[in-house]
Image 1 (spheres, rainbow, N blue to C red):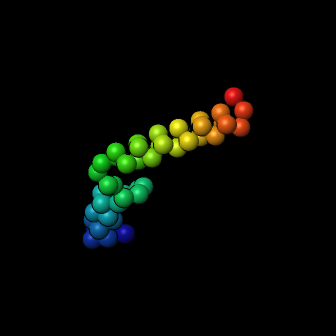
Image 2 (tube, rainbow, N blue to C red):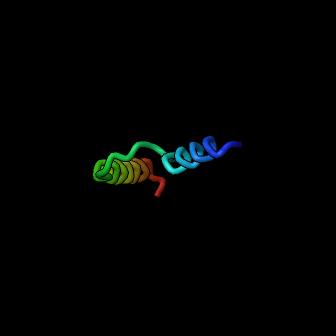
Image 3 (tube, rainbow, N blue to C red):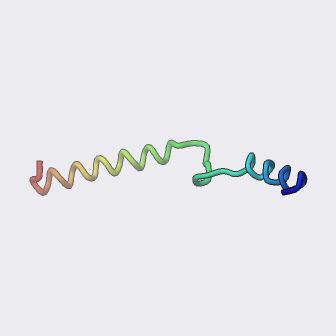
Length: 50
């Protein structure tokens, strides 16, 4: 490995990200999660599983 390729690899390693895109606000994610919890609780109650 040359010094140039090592420097290039270090630059890419710093910019590399894992995971999905960041949308900033997580409000919609929380609202959807709580809506799912409520709907699931209603379904369990209606089926008499609780």
